[in-house]
Image 1: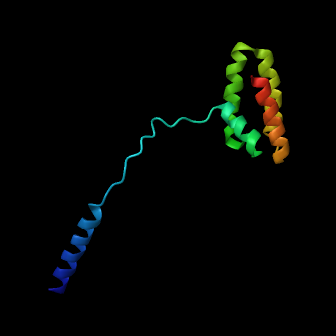
Image 2: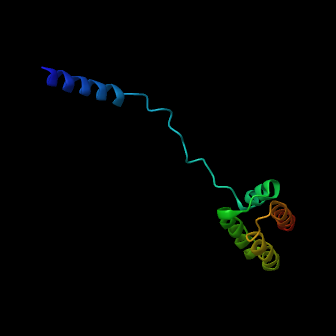
Image 3: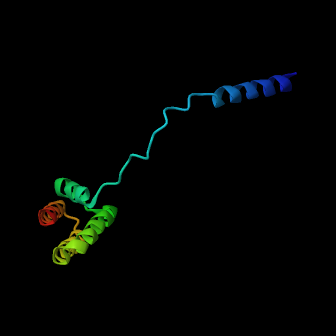
Length: 103
């Protein structure tokens, strides 16, 4: 009899836990990745190295290259330096310079 009670109790517990609230679904289709300009703005304000965000900055330079190759070449030199920087003050200065040249 105790084995039967244990099985019924376990099944009841599993049924109760499995029927809980699933929470509010989150729509991630509207979430957009930050742009290269946004990544530079973040680096300019925080001084944090760009890290993996550098790819978005590189993508931005590539888009500029299609319209203005000379400008893109200047930005590429600045970017190549920026991705090597770790000092927050240097990161801020380099990112601000790039932002100024992007506009």
